[in-house]
Length: 277
Length: 243
Image (cartoon, rainbow over all chains, first blue to last red; front, side):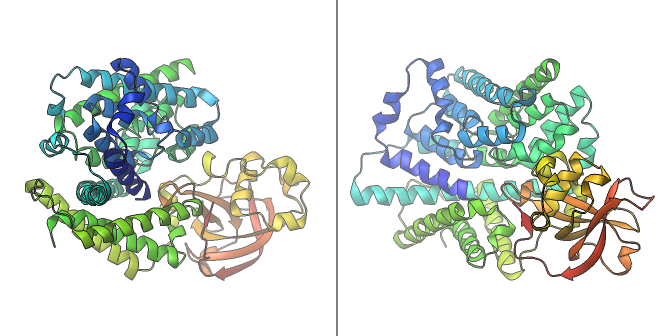
């Protein structure tokens, strides 16, 4: 909850209090370089993935393309100082896990950004409601008008984000109780099944990227390193709670495509690590 | 109430419950103490903005009222959150129990790994051992099961009872939390007390003293166990988790 509040407040700050030209000016014009730089925004905004959703919405309203905001959404939970520090504290440099997580997160975020940039009509990736919000004019306002507008944004963002957060959390919690963890652990020693089990575990558990390394550490003795990497790369991007939050902004079709591609890429990275490590 | 304000009501409900938990020192049943200040600051900020939103109630003529699935989702979440928030206030917050231990691996590698080094423990005195928690002993047990290492090292720990599936052995356990209750990992130390269930129940909190010996129970795979000198039943501590 505190990270979501922080994300909403940052989103309001970006939309209403940061000059329009400021963000645009510091980013490269080349789309590949631009997305690469956006991948590192999480270093300055270390909000957990839930908080990144309202922030990404704010960035889109401010002028980011959908593919750029997607790159931010996917990279920021992994490439940020807190996640890197906790992953290092949990695994150190063992088994290429930390390196594979950072590099894997960067590669997936940029690949996804590039893939969705191929969509000519970027608005078609968004829900109709959010697309309409992005299209609304944002006149320059000062003083009381700007405060008024910020409060308006707070009402709008909480009405979208908070219900999704609660429904997503309750569903994730219910599934955690109903699906025995032992079922997943029995799959852990097989190179392929262990990766699939970790994808499923990450999807169900919905734990924040800031601490997921500690959460998965106990499984390190049972599961292969590649499957741990799969969990650490896939989990911050796709899980039940995040899908509920992302649905406030993106169409179902986009979320299905996103889940499938990220799942396949995470599994591929895990297989490579299993082979190399 | 305007449907537009449902999100603010949700935020406000959770914020008030959070601040109440913080004021009564019960927030640490859900999150690590290091996040309490950050959580309270965010809750106060959200409270201020939410109250201002109610007070000014800015109009948004471009904003249609939610319809269809969004309306259902919004009201479901509002009802759900109100139930949870009322539950948080009405039902006393409870700690995680042995039911959670059974779904997570006790003494898995992460939670208690090497919080104590064998070298330092080998030269420790009684005063330092008195400060050892279940996590410290579980860490040492994970590194060596040589009975000679534990000779003359007094055990003085607090934890709740978890079944070891043996009439004569139970675990005195604690949860270790890194961020919040979601990542809680159980650690435990085996205790040899014949027919322990005659006097104690699973989830009872106990303070026990004793020393490690080779496990006398043939029904347990644990190489060592604490043979208790005293086992005193206590209430749930103010800080039930280890951090």
